[in-house]
Image 1 (cartoon, rainbow, N blue to C red):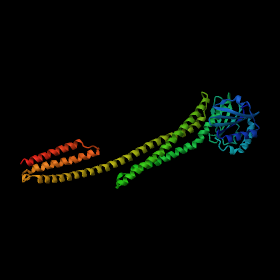
Image 2: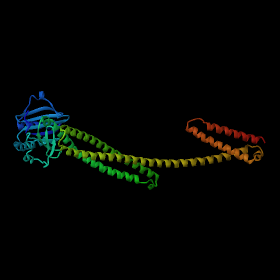
Image 3: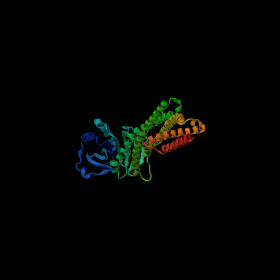
Image 4: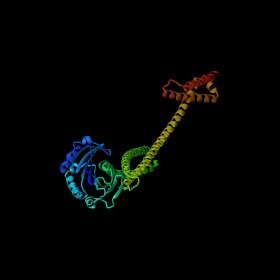
Length: 429
């Protein structure tokens, strides 16, 4: 193992599926720096903060490690070099890297670590080559002092490190692990922010649309058929709005879950490195992620409330449709009842007229005229009413697919009793 203090370390992150680009970049670095494969790597294979070392190449003062973790491949290029030689190496490495830009187009992120000697300091002239900040973000760790030399970004991050003790694991595994999650979050931040802004804009549009739909009144539409179509169209519009918003809320929930997981893992790893007391400058960078997460969480809650409002609006419009249908059904029922009453009255009159005439014709001599008129009226009226009842119950029996029912039997018996009474009155004179 080469000396890691002082040294420069470069971290390159790829999706493991991009094997062609990874192998081409490894080959280019080995040829540019005259690195030879380490044949003993399989026997010395070990893990560094979840990363597993699978290949290594190097020379006296430089190593190129290939590590994997899940679907990520990490390339570590570490050169043991005094601080005064950093400027020249950085300039030369930038030139070499530019020749492989086509192989780095799918690069997930990059990290640069400047490791000083234990009593050294970060050389400011070297930092002039990078877009660094003047006020470094300092974090006191158990293994040394970490400087964040520029705010975390999605392309590359620059760190300085003044080591104190047991720092090999930190340089080879822990910091690359931290930097990976920084890149994951940074690459997702733009998407998260855009998603939050889109949801806010969409939610505002939906609230306006729901207000417009609920503001319409049924009385604006005098034509019942047109009114029915309008209400059904409103339900379709609201259902489409609900589906669209529900889908976006689902995406937002998924994004929040992923973001929560990444923040938690990043924060947990950083806290595991901190001493009981000390300065944690990285907390300010973590706060930025947490603030965005809080914004998204609030938007999720607002969107869920809007979903409830849309659902309630759908229920309101459906209630309108049901009321409209019940009114129309009631009107039809009233019309049918009126027709039934009218038909019943007509039936009673017709039966009454023909029954009275048949009685008069069948009566011998002056018998019919001698029967008191109120007998004739009430008997024929009762007979007509029972004929009407028989007709009514016959219709019920047909609807129920029965040959007869109790109402029919009662009507027939009552009718026969009335006929018997008429017969006795007529022929008893």
